[in-house]
Amino acid sequence: MTITHAEADELLGAYALDALTAAEARRLEEHLAGCPEQAAAAAELRTTQSLLALTAGEVQPPPELRQRIRQAVAANPSQSGTVSGPAAAIVPIRRASRMPRWAPRRAYLAVAAALLVSLGVGGLIGYQLSQSQQPLAYTFQGDPTRAPGADARLVYFRDRQQAVLTVSGLPRLTAGHVYEIWLIKGGVPVDEGISADPNGNVAAPISGDVPRFDQLAITIEPGEQQLPTTTPILIGSLRKGH
Amino acid sequence: MSGEPNDQDGEMAAQLKRGDATAIESLYDRYGRLAYGLALRILNDRNAAEDVVQDAFLGVWRNAGSFDGSRGSLRNWLLSVVHNRAIDRLRGTAKTRQEAQLETIERTAGMPDPWETVALDLERKQILEAFQQLPEAQRLALELAYFRGYTHTEIARHLNLPLGTVKGRLRMGLEKMRSYLQARGVTP
Image (tube, rainbow over all chains, first blue to last red; front, side):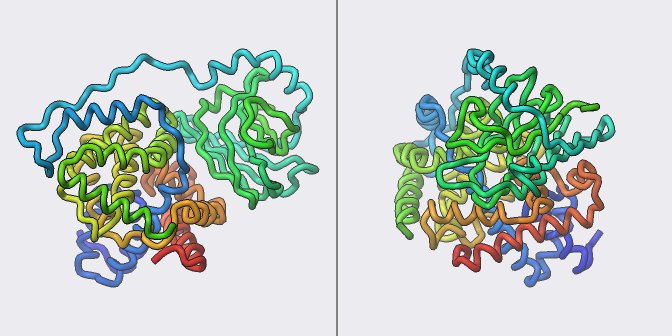
């Protein structure tokens, strides 16, 4: 089944992001093969898509990864190099399982509980609970005095146990400060990462199992902290009925 | 700084083509943090991210002979491999998407290299700004497609939006990013 020029035009953005099914992509590519104008537009969008990789930021890998890659390369000859012969098996990856990321923070429980008392709860405007097979979507607004006009949306995807947080309209950051995101359970905040966009926007994946937590909070901190050191500029309930 | 990364990329690519294994270590030292950051952003799991990065570097090593530096940078290729393998892992469809993955890598490597003209640090800052200045709805759509591996149909279903709206947000998001960067001389 062929597609029209107009239909192809609609699909170009999703195509550049690999967000089409294989069948859709195949039909579009058949069309692009005979349409230089849209093929050029697709290439342009793909170029922009490739830039998204650089929004992830650098993270220092564990030191042993370099050694593992070196060993794997030594065991697998390059197809282009001077080494010949059948490729050996890839070096298997075997590691001891690791502690959950929040485990080391247990030592801070008492401090955290004390801090949370001082944080208070405020700024929650509402939440939406979707149907059982749908993702959970929560919406929040910023504290009326500390972050007036800030809007946050947290979407939790049950099938992958992951969430995405987007926030706009936060107070602008001053030099050296970051927004820090927290999930809170039983009075214990778990660091969910930082964002340092000076314009007051956040778009971040949240790795915690959101429904197991009581609250989401955002603070402004002088660099990433293990526990909140300031009063949240946005805090909201993740519990039905709160 | 402009131009320097690509000079070094060119040398590393030549070494890889000669089967010089030390080039992989140079590549890792230069782009390992970027690769790991990208894999971690997608997978949210350090062990899985490490596996994907190892697999990607090994893939680059084993297929270096097919790399054509005139069609795209080594970094672009490496990050495309990391992205595709991480998304495959997230979707749990590594085998079934193998063919599509190779097509994607080839297609991406054939694009004009977006990194040719600017230094990495400045460029990354501007690209991040370009992403963050997007309206929230477009940013979320790009986030779900690029970093979560959802199709446009899945995004529409999950967010309870018409499919046409999602298609529009994906394209508009990319186009706005491009315009923002072009206005600052970042993209070709």
